Every structure is written in structure tokens, then in C-alpha cells.
Amino acid sequence: MTGQGVVRWTAEQVLALAPDAASRKAGGKLAAPGPWSEAAAADGALWGLCKGSGSKPYQTVVDIEGPGYQCSCPSRKFPCKHALGLLLLWAADEGTVGAATREPPEWAGQWLAGRRARGRRPGGDGAERKQPADPVAARRRAERRAQRIAAGATELEQRLADLLRGGIASADQAGYARWDEMAARMVDAQAPGLAARIRELSAIPGTGAGWPARLLEECALLHLLNQGYLGLDRLPGPLAATVRSHVGLTTDAATLLDGEGIRDGWLVLGQRDTDEGRLAVRRIWLLGQRRGRLALLLSFGAAGRAPELTLPVGSVLDAELAYYPAARPLRATLGERHTPPVPGGVPAGVRVGEALAAYGAALCDDPWLDGWPTVLRGVTPIPDGEFWQIADQEGDAALPLVPGARTSRWRLAAISGGGPVTVFGECGHRGFTPHTVWSEGEAVPL
Image 1 (cartoon, rainbow, N blue to C red):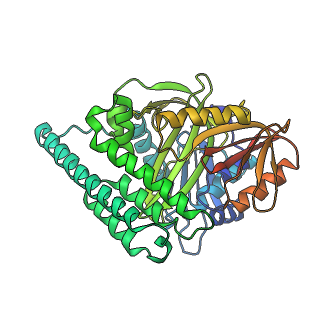
Image 2: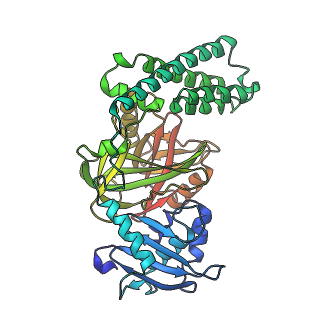
Image 3: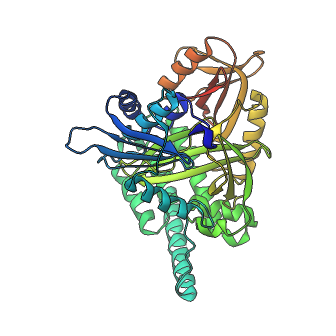
């Protein structure tokens, strides 16, 4: 397997693919030869049969080059515990998953052939080029949607004015019904971005000291977004694209891939899953090793089901990306992949002062940013009661760690051991949210 152009992953990289802690634990239990039979590897793929509770073993196949996974088990998680167990067996390099001496079984070969045929199409990620059947009808639909969003933004402006006129000090006693109804109106107006921001507003009242000020700040940003959309024609092109994106109007990924992609060796900095209403959202941050550009990939799954796109944290992927238009482009879509992921090194990183300057510059282009991806070098986590900080080695600058990620903080402190480390995370208005730390050259998700 490794002699055929694919570098064997480490156990940490495999476990970084797990959708949750329960999957990591279950996958670890299957990382033993006992339940496996006919496990083999060839041409950038692994496959094997795993004995389960039923009469038939589960058929598991992994495409390392994607990576991608297929298993006959009923799990709704990607990768499932069987795929994780098979990968861990391969990573351990103890001979259980040896080089194949014959062609893969039919159930594995068919899936691999179909997946790779899709991957060779322009776009490389299976994105189909869909031409509208009727361009005139498509234009009319777009115009009708724009009108509905404008009507929604106008209504939302009136509702925000009513909220402030009545005073926000009692907003913690009003319950969620008002916010839910307001968000539903924006869904009806086909403005999911506005609906999402309203739901975020509903979580602020009653959340500790100073919540009225935070609610007022977020209302102001929502007002600014409404006004931006209502005055879209008067905005510069890049800023107009940013506003459209935040409102919920997106560009088709396949259309982006029709243009010129940016090829680089993309280091996978971090991955984070969140549940957002009816969707599970996976964010994967990348850093171009030659060009130094940052990128964010989004992948979506139905509620309770992990998104399919996964990339090992700390690995490098030779691939092409296409960026969505914006004043400060960050979100991208994954195009053609030229090589499988291979282990990467430790990113260079910046000092705290440079991180703050980069975040400030990004805010100038996009005032609705929640955070800007940043690699900090030579920083040390410092506990101070509930308010932790992450400080430069020289101690001349520090950032507060965003409250709430208690487990991440303690894990970061344990790996640091009081010494300087390289950390990837997001720099935002509430502080720094750590996602990955490098220990002895290996990326460790937090």
C-alpha cells in the first residue's frame, strides 16, 4: 500500500477524522485483527470484512485519496466506526492490512470505480455542471427571490426598530417565541442568513453581565446587513458579494469551478462540526503552503448525520480550490485533487500582535465576520480562573480564550505543559477559539 504512492497515516490523523468522541472510542475498539477478515490495501484504497452482531460481516472500504468511506453498516456517521477501525489497523502497520495480492472484491471495486470516475470529472469533487433548462425562467426566479428578500429585510428593519423602541432590558423575559416567529418570517422571505442571525440574537438575553450591550451590538450589525442588502446596487462589487453571502445568496460551486482554480499544497489546519438547526455543518480550514492563502471549506449533512467531506487534520492535500466572491475571500470549494493527503509539517504562525492586525484588516472588509483563522506561534495558555489567556512567549501580548470551550482549554494546557506551542484557531471579537495544537510535530485536534 505504502509502496504504491500513498503515505501511511498516523493514528492521530485517523482519529481526527472521527465525527465525535464516541466514534473515536468505538473505532479504537475495532483497531484489532480479531473482527477483521480479507483486509487488504491497493491503489490508494483499503477494504475488509468486519464481524458484527449479525450473520453477515460488514463490508468496509476506504478511499485514501479522497478520503471517502463506504460501509454496509447502518451507521449515519461518516466515517463510521468500522472505517475508523480499518484505518487504525492500517496506520499501525502490523501486517493485518497488507498489500493486496488480487483485485479488490466486487463490492469494493464497484464503489471505488464509481467514486473515482466522478472525481475525474472537471470539478473533481463530484460537482456536476448543471445548466439551467430555461435561463429566462431561472432569471425570473432569481428576481422574485431578490424581491422577497428585500421585503423581508424591510420588515426586519421595522421589527428591530420596535424592539429598540420598547427597550431591550426586558428581552430576557420575553421568551423565544418572538425570535422564532421573526426567524420564520425570514425563512419565508428566502433569506436564511438573516434567519440564522436572528436565532443567534435569541441566545443572548440573560447570558451573564453585559448581555444588553451585546444584544444591542448584534442588532446594530443586523441593521447594517439589512441596509447593505437594501442598498446593494450602490455597493462596490466585492462588498456587495459579501452582503449577498451573509444574507444567504450563494454562488453555485460548479459555476465557481468553471473558472481558474488555485492549485497549492493545502495544509489542513483544523476541522469543527456544529449543529445548526436542521443541518450538521462541518468547517475545514486550509492554509496554502506556497501562496500562504487561507481557505474555509463547508460541508453539510442532515441533522444528526455527519457531513461526508473529511480531511485529516495536519495533512497536506495537493488540490485546486475556487474561492467564493467576497471582499475578503475565505470560503472556497474543493476542485481537482492531484494527490492523496500526506502528513504535513508545523505551520509557521504569527505573533499575537500580527494576528490582531490581520483580524482587524479582515473586519474592515467584512464587518459581519465571526472570526478570522489564525495560526499563533510560540504561545502559552495561562489559566486565570474562568478567564484564560493565550500569551506570547515573551509575555508582551495576550488574547483571551473564548469562554465555553472548557475541555479544549484543559487539553491545550496539558499539551503545552506550560511551554510555548503552535496553535491554530479563530481570532474574533470575544477572543481566540483554539482548534488544533502541534505537539512534537504532530497536529492534535482540540
